[in-house]
Image (cartoon, helix red, strand yellow):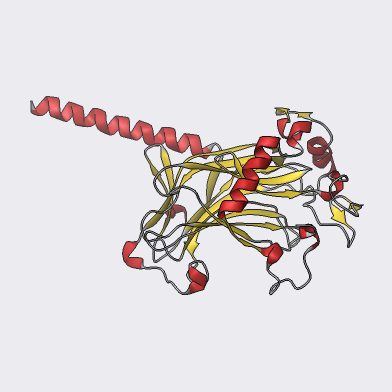
Length: 314
């Protein structure tokens, strides 16, 4: 019996090791640690980012891409997560960078998570919107995604659009004064849209109790640490930027913007039907904003006495 038990134990250990290798392989094809490597932890077929009193942690995609879709199956920190922020976002490099953010703002036990989205365009952000979710994001995995193409940036939760940022120059029938200065730049009367800068995918977890929960009034309770955000899968489906190319490489910009086909195959995100929401998606967006939007910078006259140009008509 002792020999049999030892044999079963060895098999269990080997199977566990095999599962860990498989999980590492699945994620390692897409991402790598970006800071605090020991706070990026494999647990079976899952990947966890961990925050404790010493450090948070994060990862970054191994490759950059220009246009496409990035998504994560994510379960947020359970229990008392006040002060804790988990971020999932795309960003280019440099002072004039573009960035598309999901920031999940932790809360005290029993209170809803808030999801903040933001866009930086040429290094300028201050475009925050916040929603509460129609489910408990700590109880199970849900899919959070950003679709990005020359016509729009769409933030989605379980395929439901919660925010759309449109390119005014491709919506001439819907926006006034839609004129472009070229290569993503705009005239003063035209809302800015992110120019073609290659982006990497990032995620991180950190302590932000100076602002994240009730304006910083509720602080992180470190007796509940470690705090862990859990990923089941991370995916990037986009036009992969050549590893040896600079971020301003004109050839790569032309390859990723000038055709619906490339070395990766069909660029589905650039097809005509992806240039705007479907009727069903438009209805979903209206529902999400009507029932779950809790903050919109477009109507915050204290911060913006003059309404930002992209908010006109709303």
